[in-house]
Image (cartoon, rainbow, N blue to C red; front, side, top):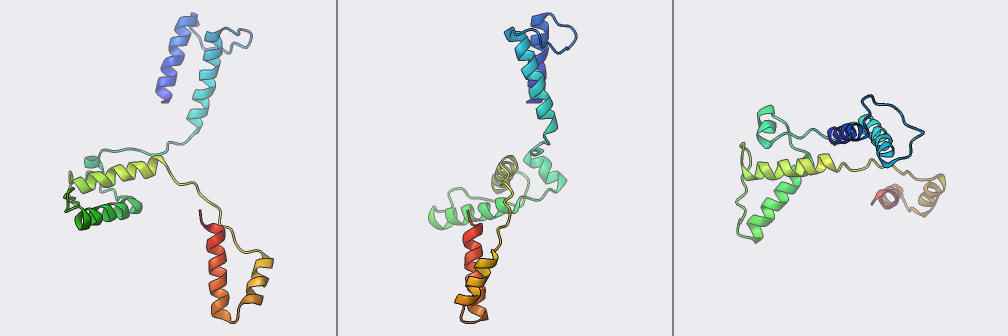
Amino acid sequence: MIEAMKQALEALYWASDQTEPQQNDHCLCPICKGIDALRQAIAEAEKQEPVAEFKSPSQRWEDGDDHDLRSEVLYKFIADTDFKHCGDSFCFKSGGDGDNGETLMFILDCWFAAYPQPKREWVGLTDEEIQNIAFDAADRESAIILAEAKLREKNSL
């Protein structure tokens, strides 16, 4: 993406006859505005860390890369569901380079790498909630159950 923006910037330099990159605050023509906007976009994009490095399934296999645990869980669920309810129509196999199950897990790995889950901050109990649980609970076990339920409520999607 950054490389494409740099190529577009070079094309704009060429179109505007600017051989040296320079800030052009005084000119408001579309080409100069585009040059300034692309410079800013490139600078911002270069500050961001890459989301993920994508390797081919065979390269991952050769490097011994593990699958994302979520990919393995989803693969197992899909394979089991296919076997139980669809007559094993996909005939999933995994464990070898080029197996269709390995390919599915590779695709899922790419998905999870490209769309990482946002980190959520843990929400604890307030002093008032703790007091209410202590007051409402008949014993220690029920207090734990009430606290767990309240924490799940506060921290679930």
